[in-house]
Image (cartoon, rainbow, N blue to C red; front, side):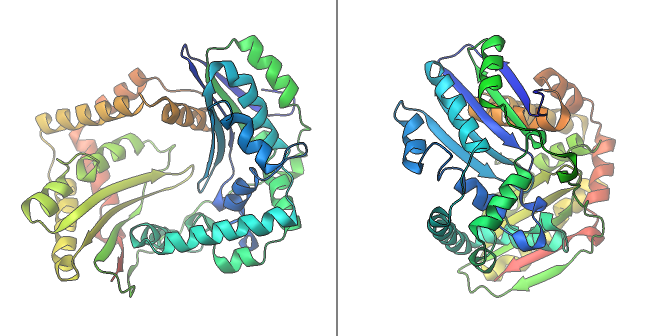
Length: 401
């Protein structure tokens, strides 16, 4: 940790490609009521100019040598990261540090980038399979900022000023909420040298710290919205374990059995293979720092929707009432662990997950540790977790028709 409170994570990696980035523990849920969309808009503005670089210079600084500069915003985090050859890591390190710590938000750049985000909102609204997810989260977390969509609304963005967005950036992008990560064939001594040179910004006053409001009250809802879509879109789900909850590993396994990415998931076998009702059906689980959400998404002909919903609920009941056999449990564990190991072979995805893990937990979990936790899950435990979270009285449902 640097004297200003900014943490630095170094992951040695003997390869020709290097990765570095800034993890900021700030997302949509940390916006004030009047700041909807500010976190995502700030992410865009990071690329528009700093105290010493124009937008064109930022773009060309890394891409001129074949590298890539990317960023994303979620409900709880904003991440800016670069991928480059190891020989260009110093260039990437300095660039990411510059745009993360020294961004200049001007009226001219804000005017242009706001239009870009407006177009992004239009594209998102034109995709019901995506916009229904945000509407569903808003219902499950009714009254809490964690339920709001990440992009904001046209109305909320129309009123934003450069002064207001700059105030948000300075209030949120503080060293105590930042982690700089590096994975590459470089020594810890060199990382320390770069960190002292490029990450040496003033510490933030303690009075600027903030506490997130944990979602507590949950009232399940059933809603249908007229969207005049060519097919019906449906989400069924509810609250789920947080990333610190003891049930999170069992719940991850449960969701994978129910509707994971493999075509042999229970939902895919029932709704698509046996009944040919849907092209796509999947279950998702998103754990947050103090809560979580799970859902089943399906799209089908309007006429088939009632039958498809009943089949989904039947599978939820089975998982809550019927204990998995030992052979089924072994297969489920083997499948999930294999999926995770294969996913970790994508180094870019792995380092981003590693940065998040270190920021939240202060450590990196090895595959062996994850394997031990998954393998310790019992069939009885799975059934108990299913009964708790798949309880029909706790289900929310949203339909676009």
